[in-house]
Amino acid sequence: MYALGYIMASHPGNFGKIGILGWLVEDLKLYVSLIKDYRLGAYKKFPFLSAAGIVFTLVYIISPIDLIPDYIIGLGQIDDAAIVGLCLYLLKKDLKKYKQWLKESEDKGTNERKTDPRANS
Image (cartoon, rainbow, N blue to C red; front, side, top):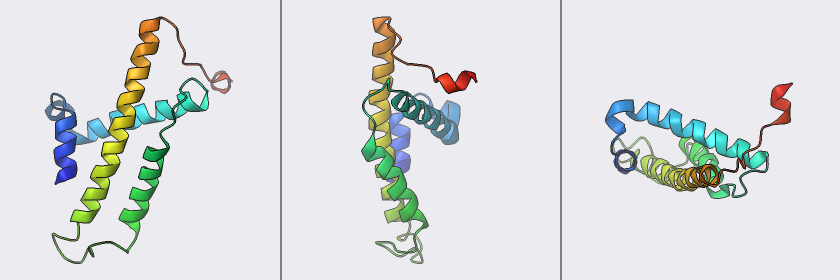
């Protein structure tokens, strides 16, 4: 419940237009772009906490060990939803910083983003 509320609050105007899957796809593309820019040396602030959060969330969701067992219908999914909500929160914070960096680099008129030399071959 918290995760859905957070998602809706973080995209107030777009949620009804693009839906939750569209929003997730947009943010995933932006996160991949962030990783590429970091790998190429253009973006210096790699979001280690978010990356660890993604790994932890996937392991926690897949793992049979939970704080509240999943076989307790209704209650068993609350801890999973809270972990997903926390992961989304961390991702949104880092993506917001990355969007700000992109905007600042465009406003400066300097293109700090580099192209991957391997992409042309």
